[in-house]
Length: 76
Length: 350
Image 1 (cartoon, rainbow over the protein chains, first blue to last red):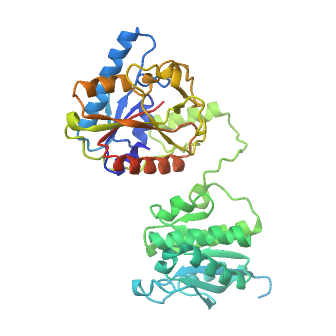
Image 2 (cartoon, rainbow over the protein chains, first blue to last red):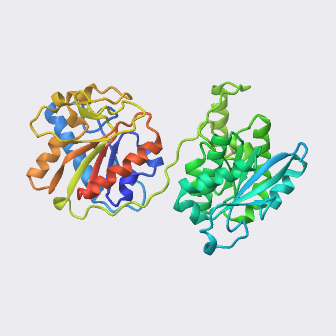
Image 3 (cartoon, rainbow over the protein chains, first blue to last red):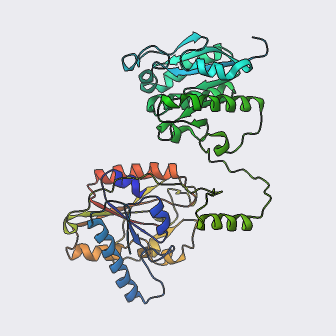
């Protein structure tokens, strides 16, 4: 899906834990997520910490969208 | 014709010696006996079969109105009462490849006869038809005719006789996505160690389960100014309003939907749930922000760190979903996003 959206000229930051698979599928901008069952969370943390964690991850995703990439790139 | 098999050969206007692109509009027609590459097919058939007719159709005629063309072609094929059908090979000719695939697929389905064609791996006809149709892998141009035709003829005769068809590698056809149980001399554990040893020592080895590979795509240009961008969320995490009134499937999903995002201080866990059947959804159900970081994005929007978060998110379920379905949904979502003036997408995947 990410690739099809990219084809329309809209950059996509794919947040995933399955980085190898995403890389194999040649997804342009891959951001390492918090986990399979909680890509934008971390249930081990307190709610406040978790939101801070989420904020950092969102910033990473926005950073990926801002980045010029030539090929499938992992933002970790 | 004694006991010889009756063979119909399908080719395009070019191989049918009618002409080049200027003749690509010619409607389906039939000639008696072999024409063009049919000579080689006939040679390879030898005493086993006889090309009783060659059906020729212009590539443009076919692709302009596939529905009409295929019906006419099927009438011609049926009138020759064939035992089997050979189409092409089409090498890397796209329209011709699709025509060969369609003719084989429909003739096999409707006349119940074995059909084989041949194409180059990048011919779009391969992706479209390799599952229902036996397609022999050929070179990129007609240089590969001599290699392709014997494989095509041998395979179609095997199919006719009901003989066991070996693996794609042995027979030379494109994998059809079928897994077959076979007895092996060695346990899987032994085979995997053999494979690993071969890999480590640089020997050749063959995987038993090949992974789908992504076609390489050109990354799109980045978002120039995030502060001035409209960002949307798309997910395959199966997040839907509680009750799932759109009936998004929890596995092998074929549907996606667009839902309104929640407000920052809402309790989204009371409104939304994930219907994904491929992971434990309890953490996301407890707080859907763990899937779609709407709370954080709203903060950023308020602070002017991004212009706008789209008021809608797109959701489907990526659990055992066919790649073809995912691609189709991706295309449809992309079209919508474009119409909505979205400049960048965050796509959390579970």
